[in-house]
Image 1 (cartoon, rainbow, N blue to C red):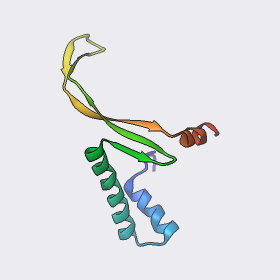
Image 2 (tube, helix red, strand yellow):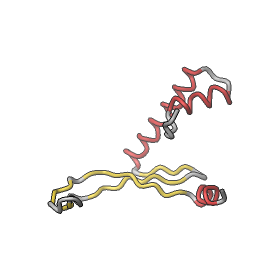
Image 3 (tube, one colour):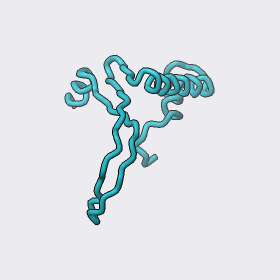
Image 4 (cartoon, rainbow, N blue to C red):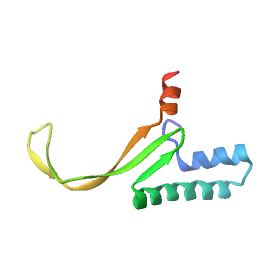
Length: 97
């Protein structure tokens, strides 16, 4: 595959091989974990994963944006965004290679 993204199916395949559970069970576990992560972000507005990092739900107000090519102004609607702050352990591992 030329795609560099890690998909749910690929994670489930790793669980299938490493843990020895069926593909359907592995897929169910991955989906359950992802759904719990989403639920936590919606309800608590924060998700901390030890040794990995923190995901925070942030609200951005409506603002004026500009098209860089034409310079025309447009209103950017209010929305929720997610920010990620890597843990010190993750940063250390990424920078050691």
